[in-house]
Length: 152
Image (cartoon, rainbow, N blue to C red; front, top):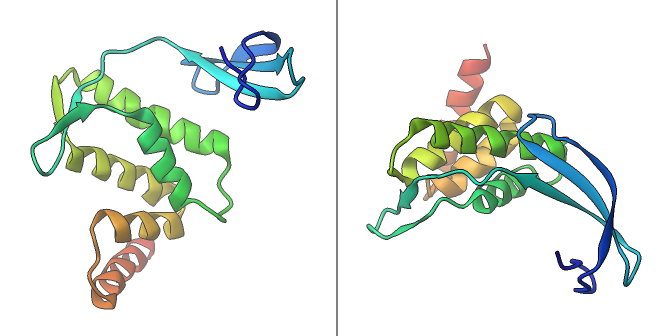
């Protein structure tokens, strides 16, 4: 494994433990080149479905895309990386357990929205505004009103 800082190949494992969902092993590593530390996760490679995009293209299920989307929505919010990792794992498990060969990008987006809805209302609205491609303030306000009516 290459060091993300200096690309050196040699490292040593400092700490190993099960991740919170017990589906991955979290390892703290130290580069033997630059001596900086970084974290890696080791998980069983699962057979995940292909994602069918709106335009009909098919691409591999990308865990990192889900993680990045949730992370962007949660920027400057009180949501930790471990929580984002947990949400991503739950979404990935949901689609792995379905056993389908293909899923739509809409199904993936809706799964992310469900996770964010329970996690942080601001992150939910941020993600929804991009995912649902709000064209004006009225669409944004409609989503906010819906969210506020659910909290009552």
